[in-house]
Length: 191
Image (cartoon, rainbow, N blue to C red):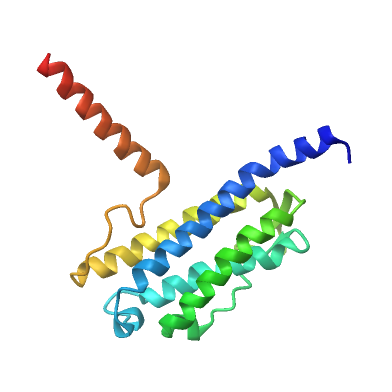
């Protein structure tokens, strides 16, 4: 491979690497929060559907489907394992999260295929075209969404959750720009 082609390949892999690292970091944020709660809180379904453990397991299922699908560039998010041990055993789930985060970043580092097919959830005989970056964006959004549900379950129980946990990156940027705008306006009035 020529040096120019190697540089072009490295540059095109950069967004995928950054996205994979963002998904891995978000998964690990969940571990940090879950580590602070009691086992029974992790397992309790409460009045709403799903426990905190079921949301952690669900996120891991999607990452697992993504990783398994990379081998043949065909991702089937319906082929989830739904491992009950992950839902009910906080320590086991933490280990799976660490492993998934590591595997995700490592897989992207060696992945050369950017065009993917994703099985339709409405009609399993259909496969839709997608890309590596698009599916990583989906995994990030999906993980954040389920973490928002986890955050709400914890807040209802009176357990403190960081304000930015389960909040989309675009919303965090909006909050940041809004706060910056408020301080700019304050400075204008003080002149």
